[in-house]
Image (cartoon, rainbow, N blue to C red; front, side, top):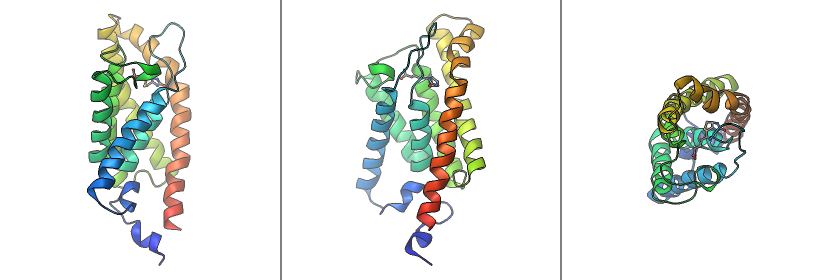
Length: 191
Ligand SMILES: O=C(O)CCCC[C@@H]1SC[C@@H]2NC(=O)N[C@@H]21
């Protein structure tokens, strides 16, 4: 049995393969928040919508699955709180209580869900990763779209048209990317 095989045990997430320490966990939390903030700067405006296409869903779901629920929720909470406090790392350099802040809250909850599932092995095969990403994205929209309706004073159907429909193809692409990246990472560490 190789060292990597011995390391990759059931009940672990990818981050657990790094040597355990508080410094590791703190660095992972800060790194997860920073990765999400960087991905938020990959922002493409959507005509007729106040919400842009961003890299955040991919980053946040990756943070949740690789760090696990506890560190994942700390990373996304740090991201949300620092952005609320004025750090310009929400979508396209935004900060504060924007109309799209509900998606950030959704990412926080999604990180808990996908992190818990990843600990049960749900990021180790392509199709299980697909289900995990689908659930995470559903949670992000379940919070983000009603929040958008309230914050932008839209009807729920207008919020669905502006805050969900335009993103479905892009989010499917990001999920497909995760379906490649996560199981491949596990294969590499088990090699
Ligand atoms: O203001 C923010 O920082 C949050 C932006 C949220 C963008 C949402 S997340 C789900 C959907 N998919 C995207 O690519 N963009 C929107």
